[in-house]
Length: 145
Image 1: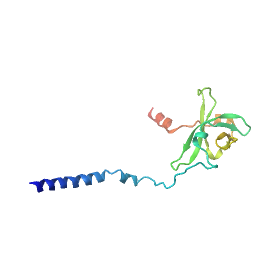
Image 2 (image 1 turned 90 degrees about the vertical axis):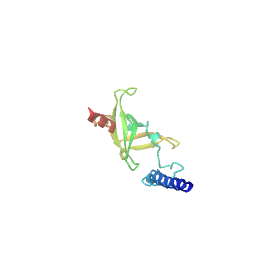
Image 3 (image 1 turned 90 degrees about the horizontal axis):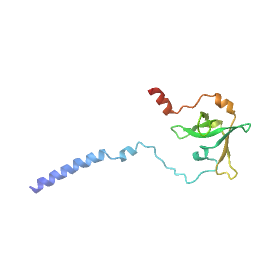
């Protein structure tokens, strides 16, 4: 009788082990992109996104346009655009316009460790006449209406 119980227990463990192996999360990890680099510090040619968001935006003639409120990042992690909030008072009646990252001239502060402001070739009037930026959440909400 004992050998039959041992055989049944061994068979059950074998089936359980193969079932657990199929649910192993390590198999899904093989689908994730590998990383071999862990940067330990910011290079002097790099900016932190947290410094760019909130930065004052000026025109080439030093006219205040607004400030950066968000960044548009592609699937590869590259910043493609910055969303600039124009006008408004205490966040009311403002307009968001996206500008390409390449169109921005980023000026560092005196110590060089943060962003002082961003300069654009466009004027405030140019951006007020441009189409408003529509994030994907707003586009999807409009489709549901």
